[in-house]
Structures are given as C-alpha cells and as structure tokens.
Image 1 (cartoon, one colour):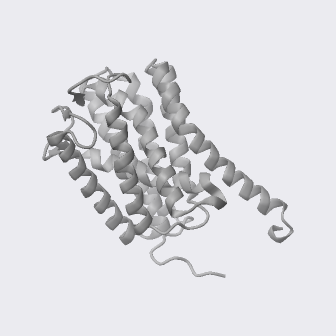
Image 2 (tube, rainbow, N blue to C red):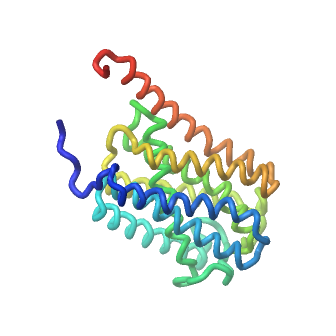
Image 3 (cartoon, helix red, strand yellow):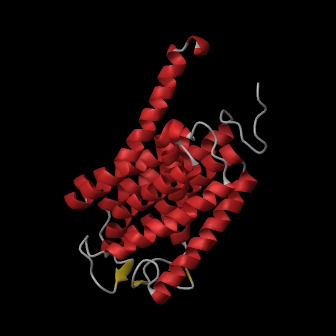
Length: 271
C-alpha cells in the first residue's frame, strides 16, 4: 500500500464532495441560464462572472484534492498573475493576440483587464492539461502534454472569443474572418497556452492516471459549449469548429479511461 499524498482531502468526506460538486453545479446552472437571458444585458454579465468563478472554484477544488491546497494555491496565483500580465500587454501593445480592447462591461478590472479573465485561464488550463495527459495515454510525456494541452486550451477559445465578442465584453481593432476574430488571436492563445502548460508541468506532477474529475470537466465543457452554440445561440459555425477542436481531445481522454477500466476488470491481477 502507498501512503496518501500530504494535503489531499478524502474524496468520501461530505465536505470534500460538497467542495467539488457545489461550484460545478453553479457553473452548469450559469451556463444553462446564459442563453435564456437578454443578450448584452446585466443578467448575462453577472452570469459570465458566475460561470467563470464557478469554473475556477471547480478546478481549484479538484486540483487541491489531487496535489494539495498549498501547491494548488501557489500554482493558481502564478498562472493568474502571469496571464493577467499577458492580457495587459496585449491590450497595450497588441502582442501576442493582436490589437483588442476590453470594454467596461465586465467589472472589476485591474490595469484594464477584467478580474475574471486570469481566473478563466487557470480554470480551463488545468483540465486541458489533464485531458491531454489522458488522451496521450501511455505515450504521455512532458513535451506531449505541453503541446496537446496548449492545443486543447486554445480550442476552448474557439467558443469563448465569439461569445464574449458578441456580448460586447471586448472588441478587435480589425475584424477577422472567424466571427470577427483575427487568426493572430489564436496564435497568441497557442503561444500563451504553451507557456502556461510548461508552468503547470513544472508545478504539478503528472500523476498516473490523469485526474478523472478534471478530465470530465474538460469533456463537459466541450459538450456544453457545442450544444449551447448549436441549439441555443444558433451559431452552427462556432458549434462545428469549436466542437471539432475540443471533442476529439475529450473523446480520446475518455477512451483511455475506458480502456484502463476494461483492463482492470478483465485482467487476472485486477480481479
């Protein structure tokens, strides 16, 4: 037998379960309610903050259970500080995403960047990294996790940017071909995501197997975003493009878990 990790909460304690399930439920409720509210209205602005904050809390709770609260808090603080700086650089210089500016819709703001933006980077970066870890399976390596994790996180922005630009939360100086968003944005996301994944690789050990809660979080977001754009926002282009980018990673991760479970069930050692 192996000793449990220091700082890891029991998955069976009522408090530990509530810590993970309550923010997840709030996040899902906020996502479901968003298309039902008036576009560009104050309710949607509040719901955007609710969804991002709930997603951040969900990721943080799952990460704290796996790697301990101290390491998780330090990693979250580092990622949020770094991505806030990148966002500020982006609005000031156009590097690395292209010329854009935040409106005053999302509050509060720090140095012109809405406070929820760096929270969103961490909130999806860790699930994307764990989904990449699971999708790679036995071929998972540090470089592989950094590369595929960066792609998996950038894939989320294929949903995020069209929705947020449509809500009027930020605007691009020059319209691009993908729902008004230039390709430089996604190149900048890919580069920033790779840096974030490298930081996660250094801060969080790649335990085997990947964390199922975080992998499931990525998969649920992929499915919810695809369904939301196809059925509620009525934007089939974003649904197809975003779904084609996120769902294969989520599907490969789920297939890895299924194969591992199948092997344990049918292996003589696992009986």
